[in-house]
Length: 481
Image (tube, rainbow, N blue to C red; front, side, top):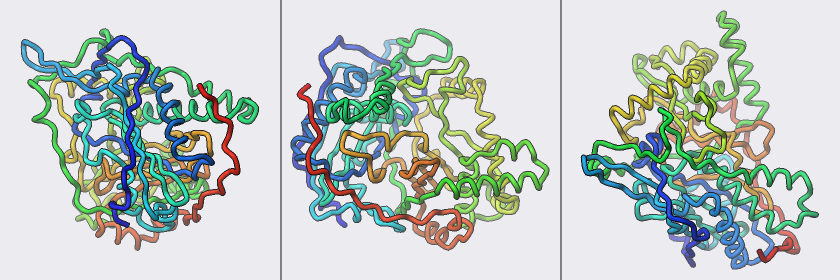
């Protein structure tokens, strides 16, 4: 369906309560993201049992409350030129505000947005605002924009969030805090129950806004970049035409993949690798090997498997889970020839991913920070290897915990941002229990070949049609404050 079916009805700006103006410097991890796209993630819900006008007012009030603790989200970026040369980038926390957009997708149903066993429709991309924005645009654009789109039998809530502000861990913590406040406003203590109340209290743990410094110096000290400004480093590159599929892997399928890798490693005499193998390694191996085969790479062509990895627990001392900022790196396996990767098999590739994860230690992280400081760069699509694969996002992100008060999401989807041939983004499966949904992006030619790969599809769990439950007859009680 055409993007023109989605029409914007209104826009409102949400601001936190007034507070003293503050500047928070961006770290090396944050600055390196300034040429990447905004995060575009969204959740599809059954329609709430009250009007859209009431829904928008309610989400606005809950978001204003969330911004009390997460006030940097309502700021803008600012660049400061230094007299001796160079520049620094800050979050200017002056309550500039975030936007909530209301849109309507005429004639579009839930089934149109999430058809089973098919490509993700292009329609989904039109449900996200700020398409084409890069993080450096946060100097003049809001750092967070929400679009609430009415469908014929549901509502899609799109979150567009500046990736230089924080990584996915902090982003989903923020969304869950907002959802928890929203849910608490809608559900009375009696109806929500003690267990849910405890869950909400855990969600209200304040973010740690103090930025990490590798040398232990005060976090107020900004990273000085050897440029008068960063505009010359910002690139806006468009990927070639891509196909995108959302693939489900049940807990049983993932366990079978892991066991297959374990048995292959034991047969090869690698008892240590067999003992350490994980479901993530096994799934990464499957994607890496099968995509390599679908690309028909020359046998001598080097290829790697990369994965986004959280630095918080790997630093010494560790950063708390509530650290608000970017603290991720893309780790990589050692390069292997394509022909060798396919010959060595599933277990060997899974163990190669495991070795890359194990090698990402505190010392490795600090060495990377030092190398970046000596030669600062910002990441763009140019840095992605067309012969490799990249495992992004995380099934640990609590996407389906984002219940705003009228039920769990029916599905999670993303926009066009930060996608390229060979990108796999991992989501938690809606059914829970350790299941995973993989959003896989390939060129049409490579996807067509992958669709003929028996090894790959033997591990994919068939989709179950997803339809919204009937709306409740009455809306839950809603407080005034």
